Image (tube, rainbow, N blue to C red; front, side, top):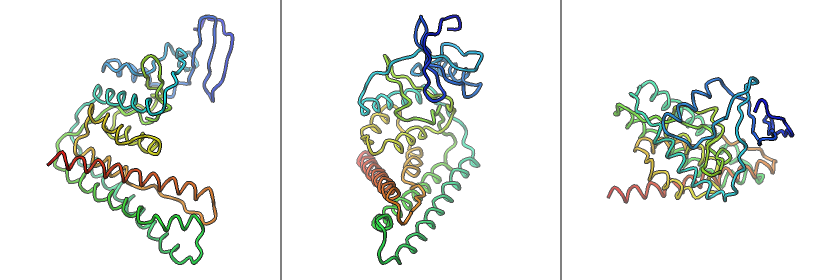
Length: 292
């Protein structure tokens, strides 16, 4: 590309689309110097569903062939993402010796966060209970407070079960984790390709699926997508326990008395919590039937 005549330059945020007499290219600033090692690792593991640069310029910009994405429905794209994710995980799985210090760190961190959230919502409940004429936001909070406490309780109990399992184990699975695993980071071309690999590193098998569910839970069929993923890369019991605990754990919701925007955001947050609850109920019932 260095010797090609540039005919047109377009900008998308800090990235460039360059058209020359020989073709069209997408240029993206390299986020860190280890990108080349990441691409090599994926190739060595036999994973080809990612977008690899043609070259890297002296300006540290990665040059990619410009690929026009096929227009798929989001449901079709989500299914492709489950296939790509399970393939990435199968290709990059390795087992490591369990460090009790690492297990305790995950356990203590989440236990403290859950206790903080419990105290936070308990204080809000007590404060808003005294309001005779609550605002729409406060009224919405009052109506859904039980969902918050049920989610916190489920998350805490499941975390305890996970910890009890992990302290008995000697090894755990690790995989390459994308860390930005959402629909916009899959390019639908002749074969689907993951993009934005600058945060790719080893982590837990549940991380990318957790990111995807948190982002797309209200527009996607979680049960169907989970089933597709599990057929190709089934979670181990302790992995599903941690996945369930983290999925059920509520965010800290900022409650504003008189904000309509806050009311809308609060409504969406409760819809998500209820969606997680229904999904987890479904999966736990399914597992009970399989075990009998």
